[in-house]
Amino acid sequence: MKYNSPRGTRDLLPVESVIFRKTVDKILHIFKLFNYQEITTPIFESSGLFERAVGETTDIVEKEMYTFKDKGDRLLTLRPEGTASIVRAYLEHLSEFQKQQVTKLTYVGPMFRYERPQTGRYRQFYQIGVEAIGSISPLVDVETMLMGIHALASLGIGNAEIAINSVGCDVCRPVIREQLKEFVGSIVNDLCPDCQNRYENNPLRILDCKEPKCQTYFMGMPSMSKALCKECNDHFITVLDQLDENNIPFVVDPNLVRGLDYYTKTVFEIRSSLLGAQNAICGGGRYDNLIGELGGRKTPAFGFAIGLDRLIMVLEQLKLLPETDLDIDVFCIGIETEAQNKVFQIMNTLRKNDIKCEYYFKRNSIGDGIKQGLLFKAKFAIILGEEELENKTITLKDLTNKRQSSFNNIEEVIRAIKG
Ligand code: AMP
Image: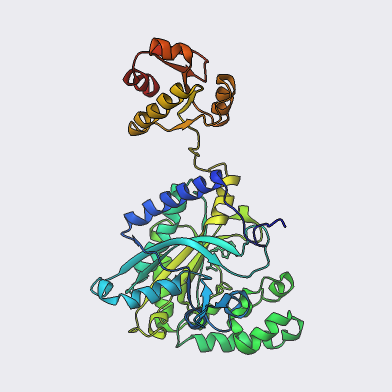
């Protein structure tokens, strides 16, 4: 029986793993400049957490969750997104955070959604996300979006664009919903079965539909921003003004709602035209009710997640991938037992001196050893043959120019390697 990775998942081989790690490190560096601190939460949580947080009538909860019972009969779900877990952790450790005017947390890790796999869409994918908890200030929205743009710019993506909208609050959301229902009412029979369901249960979700046929019907949709209450409208205007003031490019997308129910006021995506249908690299927004709904005191918050898989696709297309550092410095070859032991000890000294080396375990021949070294793209080979043992010398071969030098002790070899 031959096993493959489950549908919608993939292995990140060494080169890709280095690219992922380096990309994450660069982004985290920027997040830290904005005073974000890293938090790591479990990969699975009680299913109820996601049902409550993400929304029972969202696609994620209705169709996409990996839910299972453990041996203790607990209903658990592999996390489909990060915010619910962070809010759960925030509330569980409230005493750690509650004195801070804003708690800024960042997380990195795999997320799981049972979606139809396609380019840029996986069942296990990776996100790096942030949550700023505790402030209603529109400047939190602006600072967080600015940070997203800043992080992408640090990777070389200078031309990303923010698509932004406001989905209102408890006061104006019912008005928006009614307005939408009224508009959709006349065309509902022409929409896809999912949209017809959404029309009944969660009309705002209709705007999330990816069916091109449905999309064309949404063109003439009445603008949501016209139905916003004064507070939401003022908030939205301040956010847009401040984006302008800070020279952040944006477009208002009146149909942007995002696939999760917890958003209030600002929602946004950062898009790249290089991605085709799955063109969002980053998405997020404000969620002022979620913490209250999960049992805390009503606390405003704002967050986003960057999809690392898609981000790396963009970096690849733009030829902006970080350099991989898989090559080794020195390949160490000894054939006879005495030479082998000596070479093995030499490697201890090399590694203590921060030199990356590998040992020739196969011990067929020096020629074959050099070939192995070249496979690992080693810059040098250390060779200990009979002659070297007799003369108590160490041979260092530069594998780029093929020149060989003989040394009397390891310190000289290290000096030569370090140039
Ligand atoms: P969301 O959690 O749905 O707001 O998505 C945030 C970001 O995660 C998106 O902009 C995508 O870049 C990424 N993302 C979401 N779902 C997937 C998926 N199934 N496969 C790959 N990336 C995804």
